[in-house]
Image (tube, rainbow, N blue to C red; front, side):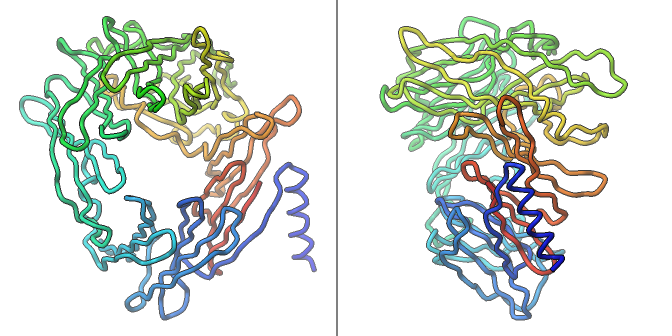
Length: 491
């Protein structure tokens, strides 16, 4: 009776806090993991009986059971956590035995049909083509990699294309072609995307006559350079790596990102001077498939520079950077929308902490206009994961040196931000995660607008956190203990 009352009180508290509990499913598996694949939730693990099976469960986004599959395993073994990905548009499961450098791989389609498998493969051979690359990008049945090498003359970069032999051949590729980049003074190369028949790359050159940032279109079929556009044409400004969108209405690429003046950043003179700049700049360039620049725009975004009060610190000089996690909309719709992640530095290190996400719209009319231009930190987000431990890198992105500063923009948003979106009233909400270092509990909360202010509601606090998946305004949390694995959905 006491247990029932505690559970009922827990659900009641969730309801009154603005988080509604949906349902809970218990699965008798260990080493579990989960992934969203083709709009369905797939949960995998190993059963707890002496005769072992790899178990795969398929659910709807509302965690209603659809199907399951059991694959017999050899002998009885202990496994580390299972890895999952959707490389080449298949469900790929990697099962590693505890304490050993071998892995078994299982490839399935979304109907849980086992297409192929490899047992006891050497771990160093698994995804070997991407393991030591500078960058890589999977597209349909192809893999594109950027290989970086060094000799007495400096660095060289090569774009390689590999094709997966067929769906029944895991981790077996044929090499199609190699494109060598001009080796002079290239600092880094990053693949934006593969669109139509071309690989779109961002190239940063630190010195020399070609110094600047370049947008390259390379033929995906032949590996030949089609076009090269210098983003900072006729200037020494720095055009940071950002987001790319292809608009089929006019066969053009739209590139957006942060722009820094040569006084703010200059790799040749080792300068990064962005403290107390209260205006950030966003660039937008539209380049068609023939390399014609159809639009070249810049938007100034003032910063609402809010200081987070920290114990023992009186004077704070903030520096800000932003990146873009989502870029959508079209010319046909008359609007392009950006999800801008804002980062703050207030301690003179090479690390910037996540402090907000905001949605901005670029509207088309007689002129391009950006709405709600002002950017602002969100103190509720900062306070959520703030602590006095300087070694805690929660919510933080760092760069090694000014020479490698441009690579700061290549990193993923820290997992303190599990998800961000707009509700049906166009109000922002966040799912946030942190670890309590005193208790080792993983804490997940939802921050959203209630009335005219933000409200932070606890979603889950657990020692057994495995993973989380966000779908629209819902979150699915996977935990595991001695009894098995648990799937919970919250909204």
